[in-house]
Length: 125
Image (cartoon, rainbow, N blue to C red):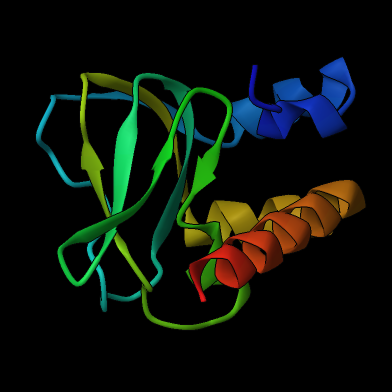
């Protein structure tokens, strides 16, 4: 089983992180993040599978427990890929402001986010 983004946090931190976002449902085929757009949101995938696409080509698939959209926020850059729902999704939606606030309030959140972003960009090269 894949490692969940939440595995790095205490139950209290998971509750704070979850409460900072809004749970949303997304239909199959929908694209919550588009390549080359501003970094205004991030998501943690609770249920479902997404395709990560660059230039229309799939470069990865992500599943429950994984974070999406963090790299562009952390690196203050445009999106490097698009996300397409392969199944109906349940997500926690975070505004960029909520992500920044969590980084300030929970130092380990900032560390885990930076590590996830660095690993994702390294894999994508």
